[in-house]
Amino acid sequence: DRLYMSISPAGTAELATGDQPSGHQPQGSLAKLMVGAVGIVFGDIGTSPIYAFRETFAGHHTLRPDALHVYGVLSLIFWSMLIIVALKYVTIIMRADNKGEGGSLALLALINRTATDGEKKKWTMGIVMLGVFATALFYGDSMITPAISVLSAVEGLTTVQAGFEPYVVPTAIGILVGLFAIQSRGTAKVGLMFGPIMLVYFVTLAVLGAMHIVEHPDVFVQMLNPLNAFRFYIAEPLPAFIAMGSVVLAVTGAEALYADMGHFGRKPIRLSWLAFVLPAP
Picture 1 (cartoon, rainbow, N blue to C red):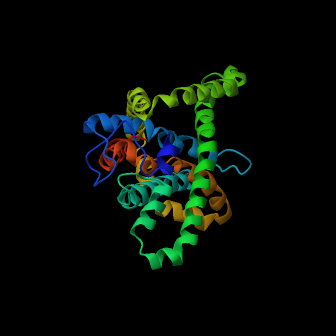
Picture 2: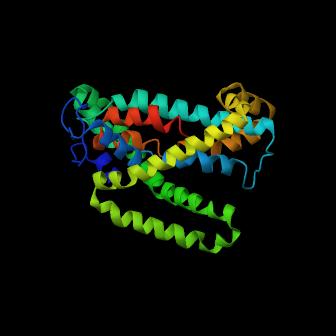
Picture 3: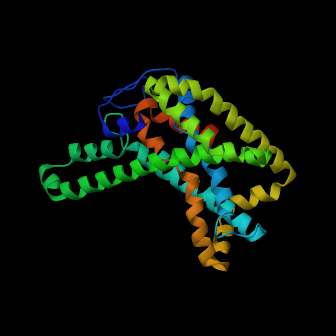
């Protein structure tokens, strides 16, 4: 459904808002749209920082969980989310909509609609190829992200009880099949179904995080300090570069903010991110 909205600049949706300048204008209360946005848009990015941090200290290129690495990785994750999600997507890219719709091809349609004939002749081929390339990346992300997110979440059961390990893959497959089975009901219904669940999830993260921040406030302060990321790179350039391959997992799903803009509107997505989702993890 997200892909459909990305490809179809003039597509329809069941949720709407009045903050779009023209064209597609879904309707609904701000609170309802924000709950739907939390359920649809932020489900992926809400879990991403958790498994991104885990993957950074696991695998073939393991890092020692000492102060340099922990503070460095936390700083990299925090500032990656702030720069890529809050600045790039929420502040800049979401300002560019094609009649209320977002997504790579919606942006391509906007460029073609506003460009002059001479500019179209000069830049059409390059712009079209960029649009196709962006869509190919979106297809790839749409294939790997659900599997990684769901599998990582189910793997968390093994930290409680190691006996769950044989059931991790079958459970993840069952969840994915169920999600795709109900997706055809439409974004509005799916959003309102998962919105309350994600609200509870983010509130739980916030409460647990606040409890640990009270116990170890220095960790929170060090995370906000970008110098820790620079210290990590200066001390160990190659391990830091390799770790960045896992850190970028923290922003998987960020493109949903732009691609789903036609479903919920610019204002509900921005408010949900800045006032609720960003502070929670």
